[in-house]
Image (cartoon, rainbow, N blue to C red; front, side):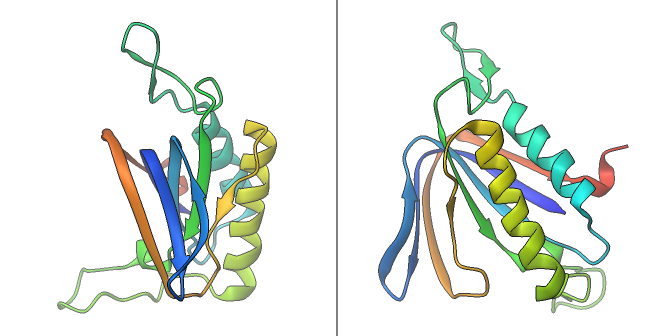
Length: 150
């Protein structure tokens, strides 16, 4: 699994020109699920993200997690994170997991993040054409890939 994590002032997802979900300050997480990803990958990532110290403390040092900061979380599935650009100019998405694997892992990630942070996780709608808006705070953007954990 591959995540792009952005610290945001606010974020929203619109579907068919209607706001589907939104958050205030917190984390906007794009979630890409690849063939071979497992519940162990999901668990490792959820724990890592929930504890990630990228929010400022009282001294202006990034020393607080999203939970410590009282922030919200939004997670949006994004199969394009699995793109391979090695050959040619058209990205290949052959590594992207199919719905039968990707949907349960995405949903489990959202549920686990809610457990770890104590707050409901705002979501996109898997497979929908979504418009995502956000104001990146910092900017702070972190990429984490479960295949690079060791």
